[in-house]
Length: 295
Image (cartoon, rainbow, N blue to C red; front, side):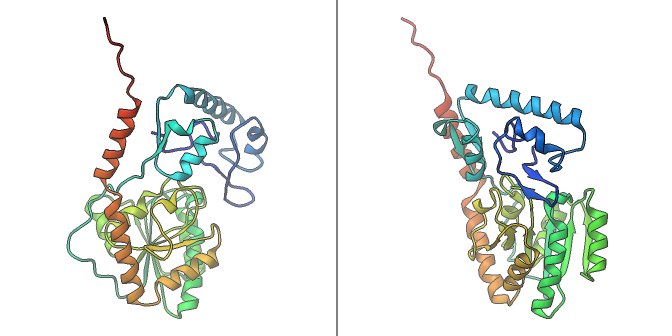
């Protein structure tokens, strides 16, 4: 199961951080060493870069030995195909919500509320989300609150930006278990402003299981579970104004939120643990090599 960019990227981030965070579509090769430090593909540590590059090449040399490779999205299938994994040995099996859905019908909050749930790093685009919410507020002519659930090194800068732009923001820290479900159900919609190519973006599917629509940048495997105008909005990657317009569109009224929320439940009902296990069992059955028959 390849759920990360193992053997296809030195740092595993598949993104540049300079001059701005942007996903990378290059194939792993020696030329990546020349870009790693200038484009801030990872830490500014040359020795670490060499160790990571050597490790990635070792991973890549293992690819021909695998009877089957499983990924979570069509995006990751294309990534591994162009790095040498034969298409007939590669299967995309979507993930499933890891927190239970169901329960009583969700009541959307009366005040527009956007939720970010995940690790707070520049790759996750929380600063872009804050700018997007500021833009959505201007379009709607009303206040929009952002809830941040998670932690990470970018938290302090995101707090400062929210204050600077006068965006109401609440930082809850890392939440798990019932608290995670409660904060999901308390939001009008989920935002996934990732600037790197998410291998799948599981948080959006977990929100969908509770009838919460999503707005997200169309990057990586997010399109596996987010279908534009069905359970949310897909936006051209990197644009705060584009993301802000999408947020404003979804928050225009309760009917639109309800329609997209119903679409979210339909999508989540198809991407289940049972469907995932069935697909994995087929992959394993196809990978089994029959034992020779002894005379």
